[in-house]
Length: 286
Ligand SMILES: Nc1ncnc2c1ncn2[C@@H]1O[C@H](COP(=O)(O)OP(=O)(O)OP(=O)(O)O)[C@@H](O)[C@H]1O
Image (cartoon, rainbow, N blue to C red):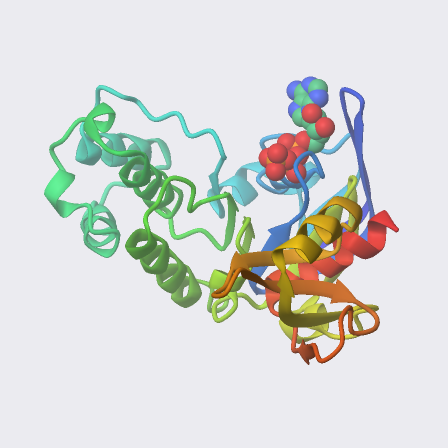
């Protein structure tokens, strides 16, 4: 478990404040608007940035007392990955492995296989696509089989097959370990995630399991159809539309957040993970 107490961090004009938070094992999905403090929190968790005030403890160990040991148990992938461009995939992983004190390289072979990087083993990093580079970045974070893994938008630049591969891998890897990953698409993580942490203007707006995330919402989700004219009017005045799509016969299919049915005959549907995020943000802006 990661225990955060009275954490305060000022970055320029921005301040992050978390009074008390206990992050359990498994996968915590870190969500929030741009600038909400997700990357700042991940940097603090990864010990790239040390807390000015407050404490973070990892299974009882603190940054103040056990930094070198903790760092050997932490893996981190920042959002802006900068890999040594002229190195080949294998040389890079071997070099980073040596820096972490590894002298047996079977782990590299298994990571190359797991992340489908074997065909690129002797290819220079700069020749790889964005998604392939990110797979290498995730592989390097796992070299020392860390107990704590912090990922900042790990699926950026990946196609759907790559995304599924990474999510499935992390789902398995999280057993008995702690992963915190900043993401943008909640729904694709639903089966793998254990908890959601919503950062809201530098504070923890919600932390709980997936069920709690979708429960006790102050608004419902409604689906139905309206005419294009009604849509134009609605679109200009309301901000509660989650999704709209053109339907047949000049109509529009809509997904709307509201307490009451917005139009006659509309149906309430159970919220998805994304809907719950929309509703929480929507409620916050009211
Ligand atoms: N080095 C810095 N100097 C000044 N302000 C900074 C610095 N780094 C981050 N910030 C500010 O801190 C705030 C939080 O940024 P952070 O990157 O943690 O947010 P985020 O939730 O990860 O956003 P995004 O989803 O856009 O990556 C932002 O307002 C950002 O402009």
